[in-house]
Image 1: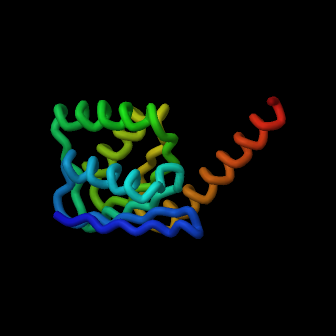
Image 2: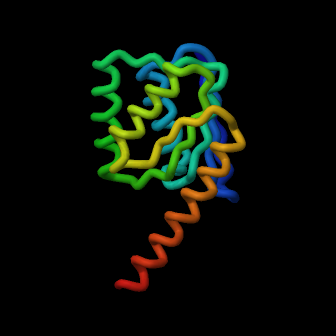
Image 3: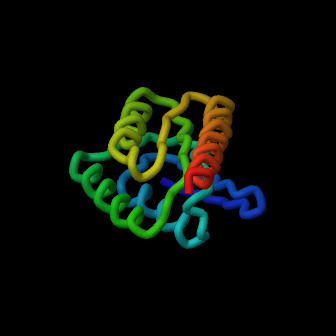
Length: 136
């Protein structure tokens, strides 16, 4: 298993690539790396095409607990995760449902669709912030 992350602070975008079997430790490491690079609010594209997400129920609970704890301090941007197998897709989808109040997480089958969704999510968030500013 390996994880490679890069953060483009000028473009305000994060990228990660997972290889091999992904478990809770690797998900937590990704989130800690995001925090270390002060990229919490950035949209993030995760390439998991050569990875398999396999979480035990206990690990899902651990991840949710960790995500809720860090979300008390920071707001996280949307995350698009590109996968290559049905099980990983289902697990990412489940994580997205469980963390929907923390950040938007969505599985995809291809990079192009993931990029399009991230661009749309960023535009939606910008519109929501602008509307909130008008109300204030």
